[in-house]
Image 1 (cartoon, one colour):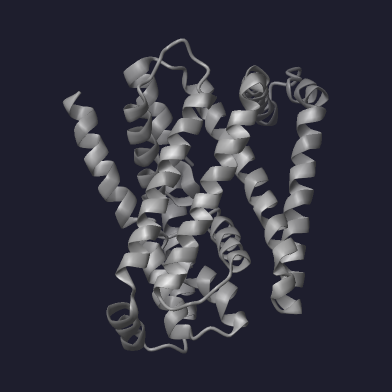
Image 2 (image 1 turned 90 degrees about the vertical axis):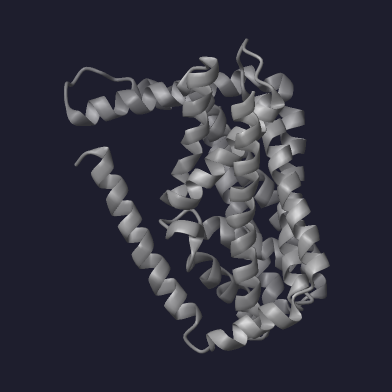
Length: 321
């Protein structure tokens, strides 16, 4: 099957999953009640704070991408910011965040930066994202002493899983040379061997870039933590704006569940996935379903419509230049 066929299948699967999750999320809730909460109880000023924090999330992400781009070509920050937004908007419509590759493609066409290099940078981004969310989960677990015992145990469990994942990644980075040697075995001319060669080349580029970034690691770590703290804060203010008086650890839990849910095939605009994530994370804590789903819709709008508007504005400036 060609790439286009696979992409179509992913979109169809995402639509099916999104539809099922949306139906499940609203199974015991009247849409009219959710709309009433949105129109009558939303604190607009508080929601505006969430929008500003989310904008800052993309600003820091663009600065971090500048650190990750190992290239003699100097790309203006304004263009990096525009491309980060463009890549994210692509992920709104393409399942499993595969739209992120758009920024690498445009960067190659505009500035002749090798595709493999910028794609490796995006891969390293995901590595630092995982580590940052793991650290935030640990911080949330420590702060969850003020919450119920069940919530504390849930946060500790998720934090343990994420730390274990980071440990696995560390082992992979520490002992990557034997893995690359195995993948680079080209003696047999089979489809499996060709796949191994391609994977070997991609991993070689990845580890090579990671080695070159040693001097910038501290800055990248700080930027990654700041990014996800801003994201957590934006989630917190979205929840507060809909009358859900949550704590910081709860916002971190929603962040983790959202990140996990968006790794799966999703419908365009993440519709269904976000609503299910909010229901799974917040309904067990006793919050009203109408408010939870209203917050989910508000958050869904923030992470789709707001970046699309920003990308359109940034794109106009980039075209003029």
